[in-house]
Image (cartoon, rainbow, N blue to C red; front, top):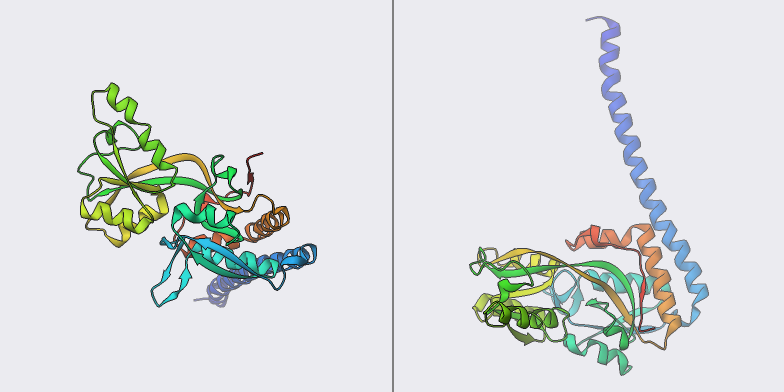
Length: 299
């Protein structure tokens, strides 16, 4: 083998190594830039909203949605999940610490309205009806999943006439409740019985209802359904995903515009830096559901 060929053979792996090293360094530079960007933006926000710095704000949560918020199995006195990480990140950005108060899902907004919580981050859909009770800052699109018994023996195909005569387990106050109940007229027109809705206080109870055969389906955020199937792969299946015209949001009191505006600005900083997407990836949530924040209010 010639000297030139030997040198050429050595140059190729060296060049590949150099390219790989450059790419790795580039990724580090991007990550550092992402971290620096929110740090700078958050410093500006703390100067703009000094009233929150050093304070402890209360987040009302319904801690029964794995992936979003749940009891830490290693320490039941703590909560874990994407929404918890989001609350903590917003607090770090604006300079406040977070305390959590667990309540039933239907009590989330009443707890906020009563002043016993400062905000709500708990996989709650931001609807115009709910905006009568609170202002919302959205952070994610909504895709519902249809949880059924293994292999879908009842052939449920969505929020449609396939539910006629069947039973759906749902959380009290969920937007899916009236959607299922409103099928009564079309079921009757088709000569079929209306669907029945069983109401529960949390996702875990709804899932247990399907597992026990008390309910035929549970329709909720697709990530919650996916987590249930992952936990019980021999007993549960996901029939399909349903696109709903809603968004998941952070609820804040209607009369606290400074907190609303501060959280909106901090959320934009977290999104711009890629932190929200990274946190969603950490908890197995769809990063494609991230969307630019918008306000949903009664006005």
